[in-house]
Length: 158
Picture (cartoon, rainbow, N blue to C red):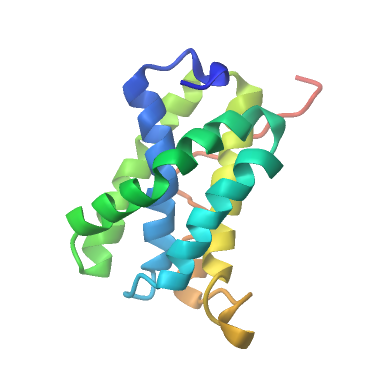
């Protein structure tokens, strides 16, 4: 487990990591079809974030990237094909992150929240629009704020 998450159990840390796959499925499947371009971009994004993200999350994304494709495929295969049913299950799973994030140092929890919502936006932009890039569908717009996760804000003054 990455050092910034020592307050958590292995299971809680796994839930935080699995949330990246959940967010990918939620956003990529918002239109009913989980697009390969979106899932491929999400996999690349986990790799990019393992070295180009906020320093406190480098290790987290390295851990996520090491198992992302396998986790994503298992989750896709285990979830219903119906987009509403699938979204409901994922919403519940993402909502369960709130007490876990509450255990973290507020600076880390805020970075996680920001990273999750940013990740959702990047996945949404991976398909559609000009040359199938940089456009967010109306279905995705309704989900990318990840309203099931409580917003966490941190300022250096705290």
